[in-house]
Amino acid sequence: MSRPTELEELVEFLHHGNTQIRQIAAENLVPYSKTQPSIFKHDQLTPIKDLKLLVKDYAVPQWLTRENNRQPIAKNALTILINISTDPEILKSLSEDDAFLETIMARITVTNPQTPLLLLSH
Image 1 (tube, rainbow, N blue to C red):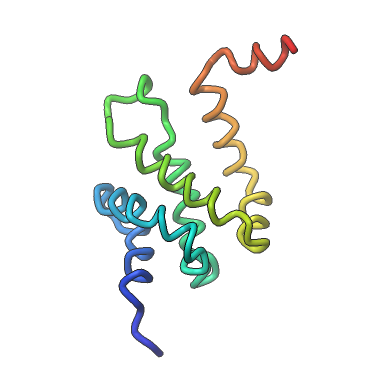
Image 2 (image 1 turned 180 degrees about the vertical axis):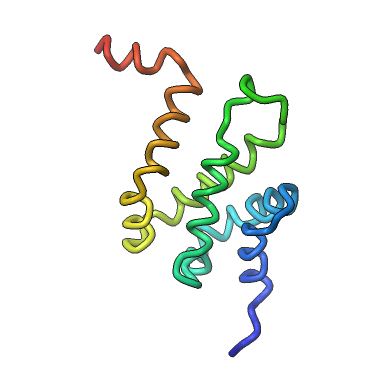
């Protein structure tokens, strides 16, 4: 078994118990999601599962929480997922996860409470 690269080790930090470490990892991985999306596909898509959890756990509008560090980690995780969603295996993982899709839809409508009304008015 080969030793993981530094980049693979950085991806593993998405699963770390410390929020600040997960946030730093997600922030630093955004550029690699465009250039090396395959780094997120190892270990049965565990990094994808971690990213989806970060979006779910931290995608709470700031007006609902006093924690200012919740937004960037969710934004970075979602940016990574968007960037790598062109891969069919990753897209399948995202599109078949109803709980994740509900989180995204709730995030869209809770961020702007008028969104459902705007959609209905058209």
